[in-house]
Image (cartoon, rainbow, N blue to C red; front, side, top):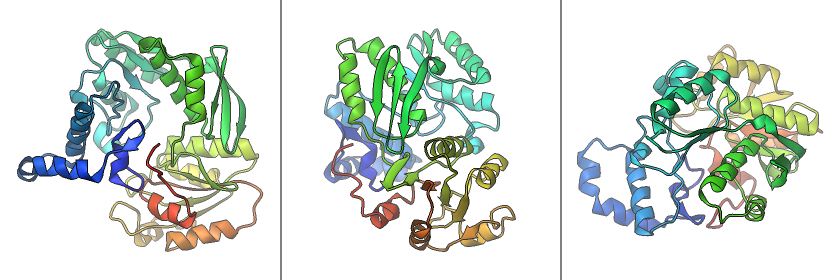
Length: 343
């Protein structure tokens, strides 16, 4: 969540998205509850996912929280493992304005006696995670990301070493190394029958649309929309190309922070801002009335902005970023068949 093009992407078994028929049948079956109660869109989606997974008797269900954790609708489950990826400032209007409040909300997924796993490197975050794990009697494993090393990194792949094994990922985001290690450690703890060679094979065939996705030569798409993600994105691109990226930004209207604006000013060779027709996206009047945003060039339609960036002669990288919501229009522009039925 959110999906890039079709709602069905959110719920998959063995990579294949849920069918329209399954969604319609579920909604029709529970129409009275959906209409007459205060159940939210995401709560309904979560119930649909759980129903679909149970109906198909899945062996393993990987459930991602919508945001936070403590009060998230996915948090009714009792899992075999909880995983907390890197924590930074996001959804602060809901989760809290400080990193300790955000971390506490995330730790709300911990369950008594259920092992927990994290690869956070922020000491303040780790201390809070440790306390919550202790309170819930969770066996907490902390991954030291410094014990892994990227040994090859280019525009469409990275290779990293972890625990004397080499792993290949067919996308360039350096943060995916840490996410991959969390997956490796989860497999080691719960599924001894999965061999390192199985994991290596799976990573080589893995894909994640919208994250440092190479759309054409040196032109990327990334849904990065907060300061942490944009910082990592621009650092990766600068490291690979030895040049700052040219950026095209379409942004949700609740994401502007001083830290984010500083990144826009310092981490791009050139930045263009555009918009799409959506109540959740910054519109022209919002952009041009913001003293810090109006210093960047504004192009009214995303298609025109993409064309302008494409025509710029530049030896470095280009990236369109800032939102999941632009995926459909973006894939159409690049003539990219987003989803062949599996991911």
